[in-house]
Length: 567
Image (tube, rainbow, N blue to C red; front, side):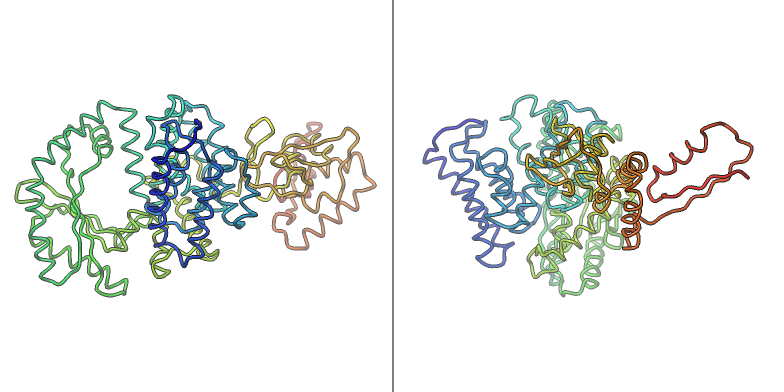
């Protein structure tokens, strides 16, 4: 980044970009109050990034403006997310903090910005040329981060796309890092979340930079073939348009050419030359339903398929019915492959307007059709949306996301990632306090803890940690554990270590500690439910074995009493 006073040309570019964003945002906002909040976020971002320029020499504010535009146009999010996109680089790069944002706006926008800052922190702890295993671990952490609000990851996807659009302006190490993250983290995420438009653009950018000669060769072949086939495609579409018009349908037909990445992947995966890519062309029929009845909408798609099928010979083995059985990411459409009069196979995709929006913008678009054309960001609707996303993320659809298989078990656990003062990462259960973290670092650190610094702020040991927090534990040589700590300790491991200390060094406090544990158990805390274990040993007489077994069992969550005896 560089700095320098903006010229009139710079100011014109910024105003033009913001006006374009506002035009898009009005389709997602309810009233001028929400628009006013977006304007306020823009003004704060402008103030924070005043005089700062990108490596390209353009005003830095053009980057968050472009990210916000992607958030609206390609993801379909609302005003909270637009504001967060505009402000995502303000903490850390300017004098303003997340707390300032919380004061000036609201907690929801502040939490989104804080989530983006923490997610960036997670990604930047890996080396520029991270290995596949390191990227897989990063992918796991990204998924754990989205447990609180998936919009954080969706906004980050928009940020990643904008960064990739400007790779020529990046340093070589930044370019290498961004391309690695794109392939191993963000392309699989975009696929999983149904963001086809973002996924395709990221794939093509990745191919253009990592395999430039192959990308250039495929692109030139596409251009040459398209120039020859444009007339053939128009002749293929004409009878379809006439037939649908005669039936009174309102529709649009788009021509689509397979992307360079899709062709490259198929050539490499199927070991076939370019000339044997038979589904190079696709035609998309997007129709307006005659009624609001979902069943009638789907029936209409089948009727259109029957009309098109009477015009051209189809290939039954290539029929795909994603309406009766939608994909796990919400995709719905009918696919069939037809032989044109020119002798080329053409894939025809049949979608309603709703289906097309969902196909391009992913799961977020579902809510557009449940709120009179607006994506509401009320807590109840976002909760349902998050539940849907989490369900998709924890499914077993390996075709959709191969990397997810490796980490599937970890996703369903409520883990978060926090950082030590030196920047080392640590995974701890969600709901953990600073004292839980202290005991996870080392038993002695927990036993001697007196307070914590969370994100450089002095905090009590009972402070509940959030993903991305930087945590430092303050200790004192003469400090001793307090039985009252059991009231806020979250993890079984920390409670066990505290009880071990009390049994050995403060037996006079043991009754008080056990009473606190009993109160917590009776209050209905599921994780405190006691599981009694009885083990009978037969014919084993090794000294110390009983204690080893007892200690090992007590490390398992839920087990608090162990009885071991001879047969």
